[in-house]
Image 1 (spheres, rainbow, N blue to C red):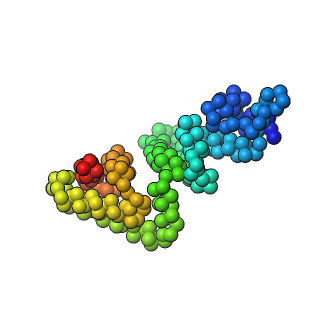
Image 2: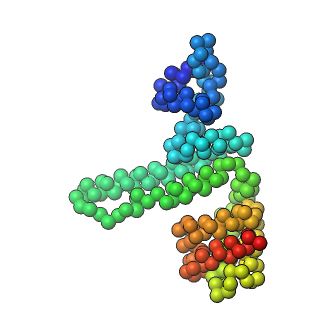
Image 3: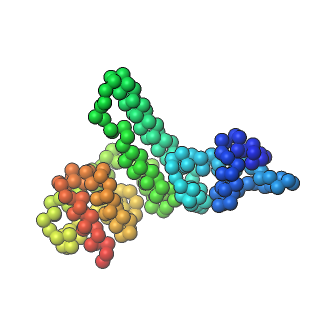
Length: 242
C-alpha cells in the first residue's frame, strides 16, 4: 500500500489532483490509514496509469470516467488504441522537429504547414472515444475484423466504394426517389454484412460524417464523382426520417 504522498511522488501527480480524482469517483483509494491518509494498492495504481494515458491523449476527465467505469471496458483493447494514437502523435511531433531542423539548416522560411495538421489524430481520437464505450456494434466489428483476411478487407472496402459509385450514377434523381431509397438500403446492408449492424440511427450518423469529414467526403466523391457525398448524405437523411 502507498500513501497519497508516495503516489504523488511516484506518478508526478499533485496531491490535490489525486484528492480531486477521489472526489469525482475517478480514482478511489483502497483504504485509509489510522491517521486518515488515503492508501492506494496496485490495482489503484494501474487505474491511475490508465487515467494518465487517457489524459495524455487529451480526453476529458468526464470522458475518462465514463470509459473506465463502463462494465464493458477492456484494458487490452484500450491499450491497443492508446498505442495507435500515441504513435500518430509521435509521428506528428517528429515531423514538426524535422521541419524545424530543416528551417534552421536552410535559414529560410518554408511553405510547409503539413506537420501541424492534426485532422488525422483528431479524427482517430473522435472515433476511439465512440468505440471505447464497449458498444455492441464495435464488439461486432472487432469480431468480424478478426475473421477477415487482407483480401477480405480489400473486398469489403471495394464493395462499399462500388455502392458509392452507384450513388454517383443516381445523382440526377431526387434523393427521395424509390430508386435512391433502394440504394440507401443497399448501403445499409453492405455495412451490416461487412462491418456491424447498421441501424437507422447509426446510418443517420454516418450520413452526417460523410459530409463533415473531409477524408470521407473525398473518398466518396472519388468513387461517384464530385457531389456524391452530399447526395448520399441527403438520401440517408430522407431514408432514416421515414
